[in-house]
Length: 288
Image 1 (cartoon, one colour):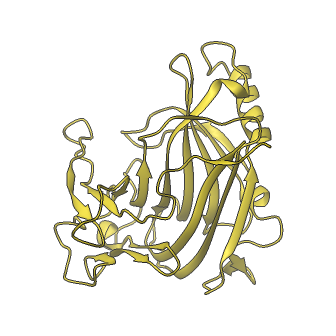
Image 2: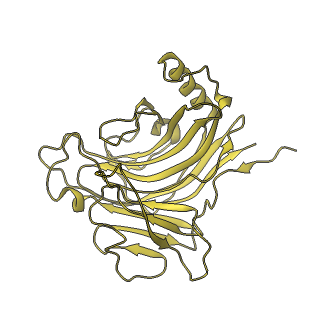
Image 3: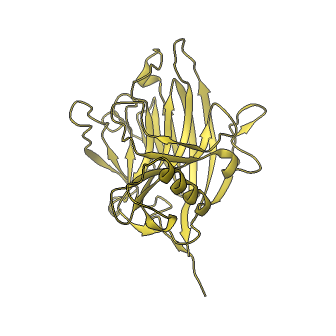
């Protein structure tokens, strides 16, 4: 009998997080490890990392005393683990970065996300990614001159060809403040100086949430109700490969079977001034 294999280590965040510095854009975007956000003195070394790219004053340097399940600066950001739900809550207030000024094209934009890249696995014939999330808080503060206003909660898998250099940011567009149902996006990473220029394939909300999204009555919906998703990735990976071949991105002929997953990240990437909170749990990537 064939069995499902779960590919993401520590899918329930039980080992906590290594907190990363912000990117040092003057020194080749260098990042350092600042410390461990763990829940006990004898916790094993974390697998996940907590990243705070360009989100204002350093979360770790400005952390305040709190319970063992919460890392917070008391003002703009927190990461909070719920041991009963085995869930993680991420809150980011981007006003610490923009300081009342507009989001200008070419600027870096604020992030608060978790990531890991310590594994490499074949995806198999029908990989499925699943999870649950709920929007716990959402407030937008438009500023005159914003070239874009977009609060996005995204999940990206790192797909790499088993042979060669080909790499793809393969995403799920879980939430976007601009529309309830975004379309699938295919393009290239750009818009800021540290962009990788790699191919991006991001599945739109219409293919992730066929019945309902994190919107209600024409606006983002703050709720205590979990929203489930489960997506078969195979047809999307095949579409990604077809696009990359047509556009000349892939250096050698490729098929969907040529790619392995070697990491992922999930969290906030927002342009403009927002204060938003998302809770996630049960993130899993399954294959036969």
